[in-house]
Length: 461
Image (cartoon, rainbow, N blue to C red):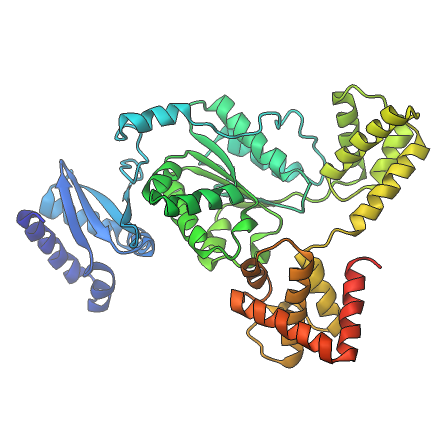
């Protein structure tokens, strides 16, 4: 470290120490290290993003005025934030968010190969999903309106944007429509759409292949990051940690973040509290299940787009009896058309009833982790909220263990993820719970009967 820089920084610390309490100085300033002074910019290192935020919110004026006195009136301040100690990763952020030399986020400072990658970035957007073919109704009007605002002014309107709703209500369509519109209105921006699952796979590969820094540089260079099904991060602590640093970097530099989930931030299980807090910073909008009129409009749009002819009474019948999701509505249209073509049958109410009967039988077999938790809690008369406490009461423990056992039996979920959703427990706890329930069912006839009753209720028997 330059001795002259150290001397000047020590003078700065003396001034700061005279202007704050000793406790404040020791807590927030004593550990700051001056890294470099290039041109008229001083870069100081702080040990966490929390420290950076606190200094910016409470002492930035003191810091800047002190630097002006000691180093000159044109001195600018840059923070180097330790983002990941294990991988020696730091992020640099200026106090005015204009000078951004953070880890790979400036195209001008990037190597030629990185600049070429900027130009060749595949946004991975599903281009057929646009606002033009997103059918609007009461259930999605707010989300659509907010999405249009974000497309017009990415990074400035509703950032982050968190859209949630049950499966098949149009979340993926909407966020892709936002991305497509942004690329149309702002072609200079780097837009990326990625599922949470793919993000997790990329993160794991970056660790295995020892190119984690490249992974972080790439994501920190994005202008509009769209993550689908963020609930898939549940229980993946290291993936969440990586995304936390990416989120902070992008948000602080005015980049747009858009996320979807099957539930609101308040209902997400297995997620770090610091992430959940950030999800709530911007706009949270729900897409509800489509109402009857919207379902009819969606069906009409699908029929018209595919060049089909469906009697209005068939459309009304489908809309009345299928209310789960848009995906299901469109699937019914495809099934009816296929049956009509193969069997040379007319598209009428009778055909619709037959197809919907088959669909209803299939629909009954769908089981979610929320279904399991509710069925078990209701059966034993326990509040669902009690499951996520640290209570060791016998009845609460039993509900947790039975829920874990049935989740492992019926769902294609990892043991770790089951544990995070049910009481925020670890892998070993889930295995122990399943073994306990198996042993109890083998030795206790009454309990075995209870377990069978719950299982049958889950399957709609």
